[in-house]
Length: 297
Figure 1 (cartoon, rainbow, N blue to C red):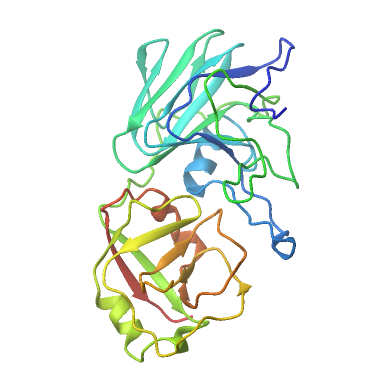
Figure 2 (cartoon, rainbow, N blue to C red; figure 1 turned 90 degrees about the vertical axis):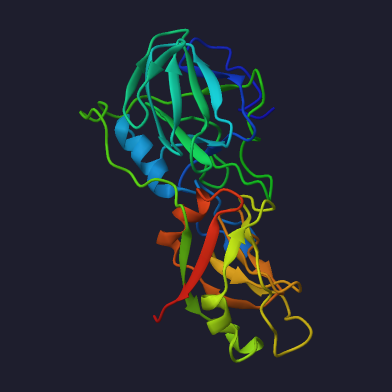
């Protein structure tokens, strides 16, 4: 039975899902070095928010957090622990009382930490001192929705163990962090298959106005907007895909690959979004205006 489904049966630090939310998953920095085995990296979609949450509670960056989607989550702690919520702005309550977002909060034993729906953006990150100690798979505790590796999404009543705290919480009242984008602007490095498109395709990509599609998920950010014209018919033999690849399926509308993307694909890739700019894509709700900006290497 998965660590996200079973009670630990011991009086150690544990959090219990009272309200799991629409989609709450365990995430860390991901499982690197396994693409040749067909295993994507996965990990937190908004890595800066994940790292910040860990820093606020005294964890190292690789500690596992909980990534909520849209509707937040409510979690009861068995023992006293420090927590922090970052990412999408939201209301935070501890034992029914308002608590700060973006700052470390001490939770007494038995208290419910209620992370409300996102007031902007999509995904909030909940860090607990010591990190979520779900069983690692291939060196990572991340839940991968495409491959099914890692703990399953949180369900009501699930209990997750916590690790041993690493250090004291950050001595801050609040920290600056970027807000969700009103307009998503993604730089795109051209290639490797831009020659499969009409000569004006990159210019069309830059001039067109797209919007984030409701069909987007942790695998890829899909777009609504004008299709890109191809100069070659047919499809490629399946080839390697990287994080941030802008793949163009037969309907001509670009898809930006995110953390749970497949590691191979047969649709041409017109460009690649640099990894350090993908955090904004993680926080762009459906309907967010989107522009692609071609850049040189």
